[in-house]
Image (cartoon, rainbow, N blue to C red; front, side):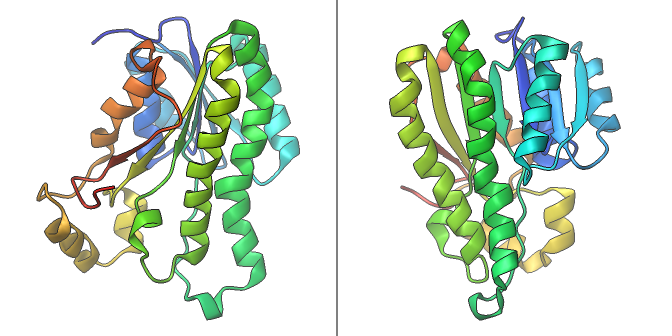
Length: 248
């Protein structure tokens, strides 16, 4: 495998499990040092990164707290000299009908999924500008395109990420920094398997052009591409990686 990110440092939010864990391992295989930001223990992810030949450090970070994000930036600067690749993968997705969503639940989803992207970008952008190089990647979702019931707050947060990276791209491109989003379809992880009935997976596969359930590994090629110099002229884009579930 090419080591297209040798000498770079990647910060991955929600890197302890699922898609985030796979992101950490793949970016390490590409040569990056990894800072895992999560509220969950990340020992297994650190093992994956080190097995791939990379260096990893985990920082407990509550993304709803701007103070925690500031401490995360300080730790990245201290350990690795700054962030080159920011992958905002962390998110929550409770399924609640709109009439039953309390405002506190609405705000929690928007705070963790969307507001944190603002805080993270503000924290790490100055270092990227100083190096005239940076990659900012947000994990959105095809739920934004699908209109699945029970996810008004989640859909709003993921749509917000797409709008955010588009506007951000127009601001930071002059500094050698790109901003893009990946919109996965339904991906099999421990969390989705625990939270969704089997019929959801079956129904989604039936609607896809590619007749199988997505796995975290399916997102890693697009991620590595967007994080590398191979995508130096790609910015403001949303790449749907969903087996042809939605065509936009």
